[in-house]
Image (cartoon, rainbow, N blue to C red; front, side):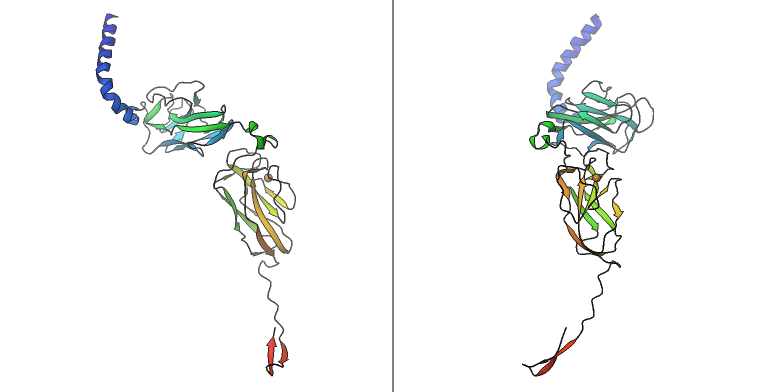
Length: 312
Ligand SMILES: [Cu+2]
């Protein structure tokens, strides 16, 4: 005991001398100070949030996707090289990276090897951070730690425009749906294969509710339907709920107006809605422009010029 007390006092004296001196260094380079545990991580490995960044707004209930580069996910306890499992830090500072990560409501362990989780947060500001760790829940060396991001959580049920119609999924900025084929002015056969283009969102089959995903709908000779309700399902509103990115359809001969409208698992367009421009296509038997009828020449005597002229 005396020995221990002496060590403590001695340690305290040492700390008093050195902390003010090294404290500046430690603050200016926390990454250096934070070495990981005994398990090595390969160079270039990283953990990160998929589709979520600092400053984003989230609903109270949302799915958080864990991204991992250069390593594999394995359940806790399984001893495999270059693997580990995800941990999500909620409203806490980065934990000590050379120790077992605590296991509580703010240090969520995904020891079953999960790569995403449904997270419920109270409205307001929260911080989120991913930490990858080995079979013993100890971060690797060098440690894999995501940015500690700040998110704003809003209670969607309380938001007036959405209260009446339920939950419209937000669409990311720059989301875009467009026709790869055909394009405006094209001639097509009665059974064209329509190719759907999608930028900055993902495809998921109908019923599969994931953020920033949905499935394609082709509007044929139809105006935009109400955007806060499920898209009708009929000849003029074709659903591609299996997650198709192209589809062979049947169109009657003649001119048609086509538009793409993207919508969520429940066939409700996103907010803001993601739809294409209208394109005009003409259906012909051959899919080519109709042959121009051979103009008949008509010969008239042009009295003013005292000559014969040909007219079409
Ligand atoms: Cu649908």
